[in-house]
Length: 271
DNA sequence: GCTGTATGCAGAT
DNA sequence: TCTGCCTACAGCG
Image (cartoon, rainbow, N blue to C red; front, side):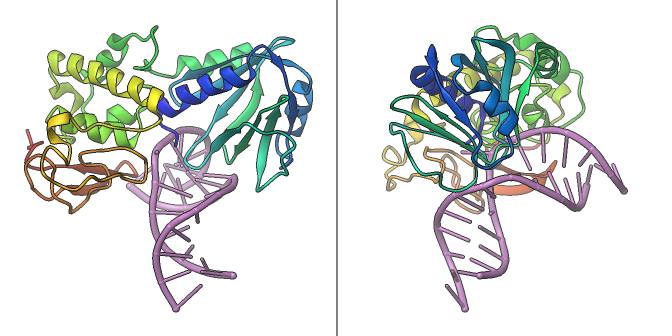
């Protein structure tokens, strides 16, 4: 479930289970054998998330494991050890009582400081991180003719926002997803950034994406409760042809930059 | 068993 | 703008 909030949550979970502890490291699937062997028996020092990227450091080497889950990747942590390997486990970490199995990542590699710095340098500010500089994103957005919906998901502009948060934050601020970045006012940007930070930090705690304000929750609107398969309550994401929770208009969808975009044409009118 | 789908991104065209 | 790729699972026959 890899938008940025999930990666931050994962980093926290890994730290709780493994930080400061010696780990057994292996690559049952066979595609991270050399890296995994190098770390076997090492002490894990910390896991850190930047946008959708996860970095894991160890005491005995300056190199870090860089993981990007991509669309399908999962990193499952269970409170058991001695488990049989099920499926294609790229990397398995075990301490006395806990097993973490990584499957299907786009990236899983041991990187030196220079390579890590390279990745960091190409990422925009991450709304979840305390060290984020939202102005860097504004500089790009305010000068761009690309649709705001495209810019929000561009990891060079903002790190960690994915298809759900972009659709939801644009809905919450009644912004036309096709409006060029240069059409956004500074105030709108400040509001969008603050909202993304709040929504994503909450998501990192709960592990769900919840974007529906209390007054629009199904119960408050006299509708039956509803839970989508990503685990939270949302306004427009994957609700194509369903009624907008606010105005009742049919939610629209369209492919934009290879991803499905969802919006309400009435709440987010063309500008 | 097969097909379609998924919260992503890089590299080719 | 399009294709390929990493994997699991739901829905279908």
